[in-house]
Amino acid sequence: MDEFTQAVFDAAYASRRQRSLRLLFSALLILKHVLRGLVFSWPLYLLSAAGLALPGQYAWAFLLLLIPAVWVSGTILKKGLHEDYAAHVRGKLLALRDLRRVLFGVRL
Image 1 (tube, one colour):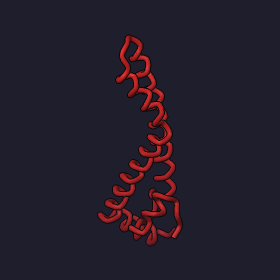
Image 2 (cartoon, rainbow, N blue to C red):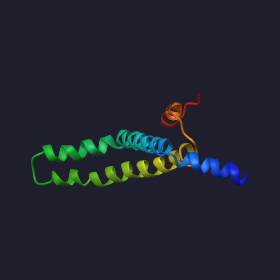
Image 3 (spheres, rainbow, N blue to C red):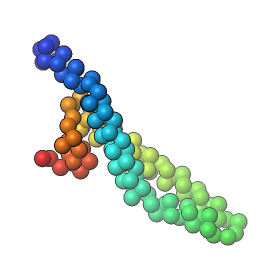
């Protein structure tokens, strides 16, 4: 890419609209991956909640299931967010029509 083209791209990429779109897309990707992590680890969260409802001295053992639940959710969030942001947002000029592509992987 020649210097002029790079300078035009950098100016457009640093514009307020592009920063706002990157922020919006980042927030939606975070929401997407948080929900995905909850979908995969909801049984662990449910069993942890059962520990609060059960009487007895060993009810706390169910609360230990929160450790893998949070770990699974966090891993899915971190890895998925990093991959999706790198593939769809970083280094690209965005438009609102790209929202479907970013969230669902659908090409228009």
